[in-house]
Length: 485
Image 1 (cartoon, one colour):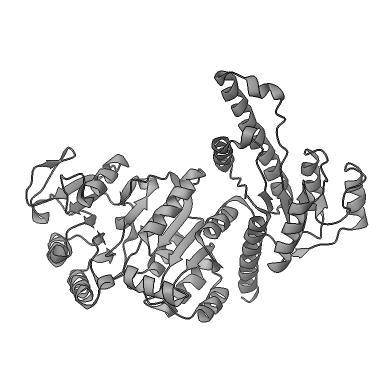
Image 2 (cartoon, rainbow, N blue to C red):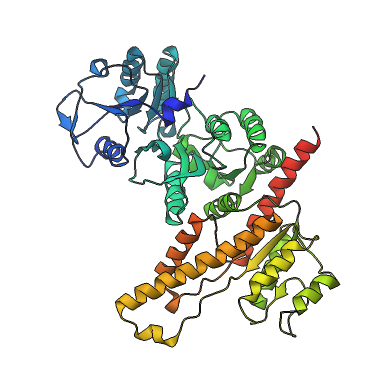
């Protein structure tokens, strides 16, 4: 029985391999735990004793008071079996082995990893790793990981066999103001596997969406069975690598993972309701989509666009991805005629052909209430009017103008979100966010501000179509399973 609370909300932890050298991971990881604001007791262990980062250092695990809930282990590989035995003798039941140099290095490392595992199992201790970057649990202010990243609490769980990839996902989420519920880097998976944490986050009340990076499986059948159960509760969005010989070879030397047949895995994903994507950008995009939108009831989509080219791109992408760009009824066309210029497309996509950008809100609502649509893609949002005087404003005036631009977009996205809620249909937005002189920092501020209100803006039409297709596929899976019960 895995006591996941000991991993993600420990009341105390013992840190084996603590170092006073700022260049070593035994210092950096301990520093991250402190900087993250962990509230429990921390017991650094180093035979030299002394003090590190203001904490008294214990010469051995045996000298630590009480029984810590969790061990963070950064000792060299040659000392790992002894370190695990010391934890077992002290009654510690959960450990994160960050140290590398095990099965990923060959037979000798694999033998050492097996000895470590046998020692832990004899004492009833469960392990994450080895060869991992650590774990994060922001709601409990636990940041026991290698790089100094401190995402806020959120509803995205990350289960990654690569620490590097897990860190990338966390940083990208932070950049857009989305938080993390849990992040675990499983590394070589000597003991606990990715599916253990997928199962845990599947029932974790802090998590709404699970993002996973997988290089290979120790037990493919168990992974499938776990994912199939969890997918009924919440979406699993997954990148699976090692599908080429070059990738498979890299996976073997990275986390000692064995990659299987790509075609077989595609079938497993369909049966288990897993949303399989091709790369990390798609992983993030789809994850944001599930966080910000209701599920579509089907694949019928209406498209509203401020420009014709984006509409064509979106229509093509939708068709390729199995979405139906529906035909508009005469009644819908008449309603659109009442406020759009006479030369509008009179078709789906609804092309505003450089008409008033405010009309896109009205077009979105017309498409959202149309009984033949299950969702709407909006290619554009009402943009602010920026006068020529902006170019001559002093710095204080520019800051004020920027605040006004951000507030404009927050309001516009809020209006679209209300339309989505009113009709209970997702409105997926892809748009250029118009800023003076293409100000990327201001654009980032807009994205962060709308994320607070659970809105997201994709940069290209095909991204909106891809996200919508993924959500529609998941909706069909859930409806199909429930319909067969």
